[in-house]
Image (cartoon, rainbow, N blue to C red; front, side):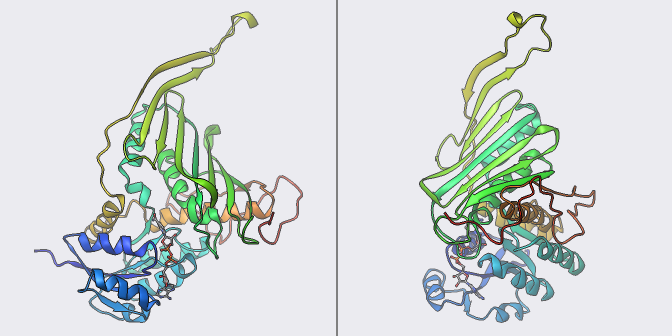
Amino acid sequence: MKKPISVGVVGCGYWGPNLIRNFRSLADCRLKSICDVSEDRLRHLQTLYPEVETETKYDKLLGDPNLDVIVVATSVKHHFPMAKAALLAGKHTFIEKPMASSLEQCEELVSLAKKQGLILMVGHTFLYSPAVRKIKELVDKGDVGEIRYISARRLNLGLFQKDINVAWDLAPHDISIILYIMGETPLRINCVGAAHVTPGIEDVTAMHLHFSAEKTATIQSSWLDPKKVREMTIVGSKRMIVYDDIVAQEKIKIFDVRVDRPPHYDTFAEFHYAYHYGDTYSPYIKQDEPLKTECQHFLDCIRTGKTPITSGQKGLEVVRILEASSASLKLNGAPIDLPPVGRDGRASSTSTPPMKSSKSTPPMSSGRTK
Ligand SMILES: NC(=O)c1ccc[n+]([C@@H]2O[C@H](COP(=O)([O-])OP(=O)(O)OC[C@H]3O[C@@H](n4cnc5c(N)ncnc54)[C@H](O)[C@@H]3O)[C@@H](O)[C@H]2O)c1
């Protein structure tokens, strides 16, 4: 029989309990300890899981020789120091999204995990969602044709964060899905937004990602919308897909519609766009909890030594885009060029992306209030 992998989770606020529940449910895993500075949170979780050890001091988890894994589910500013300490203590490390507060921090964590021979994984949960995997399968099979653009909307009222703007909070989900579907990283980013509620912290942003061959993606993120929306549209040259993550059934609808421009014509009167209207259908999707699949994948990677689908490197690529979006916000939406990702998967050896402004607007010191 396999020895269970022993897991400790730090951060038992809103999201941590979901990780705790899922790791605890897995057969080859022992949820050994949970840690939070809040004794109230620990007391509450101990009523649910009395067998689990509780700690208010993170150092206790780091120093526990019987702990194989640390899962970091605290707010973003703690991700880097906690994950670095976990890797230095010889623990396989799972970090919630976004991986860290800067590209430089992500690079340090990726190289530290490699040096230590440990698995580093980031919680980009949607890549474990059956709906997203179905979309990827359809795109890879060529059913959608060439992707022309993707547009994503992730809107709701709150939860307002104090240390990151709405793009860093909500867009990591959309960025990770878009990179996965596109199968490439963008060449250029620009982002506009406004801080209506907390000065300097944008609560509404619109990010544009420019890929090769005129492919684009737009991500609208908001904490200031009356309606909860989690929607993505993938427009291809053959078909279009609408993915609605809010609905329980038929999350994906495939529209067999397209428009073609005739290759040549002799007179203006002969020129007509060719509209194709076919069926709309919704494929069957098995309902598995993405977070459970994600937790199991992490344990499998520890056992096999395989690189996780949402590896530290993939988390780094998302943070690289977020960092460029912040730079663009300060430049009133000016485009920021991104260096190409090398064949070894490294984004850049520099700590900050090179900035290129198409305007002569001076950088703004913080987000704008309105
Ligand atoms: N993958 C997803 O779908 C998803 C969804 C929501 C949140 N998240 C991510 O999960 C992370 C946590 O978000 P949240 O909404 O649960 O935040 P939260 O503020 O509700 O919880 C964070 C917890 O960490 C604790 N904490 C802070 N400093 C600590 C320390 N030094 N030692 C021990 N505990 C400490 C806090 O007391 C709090 O209970 C974030 O990175 C967020 O982006 C991921």
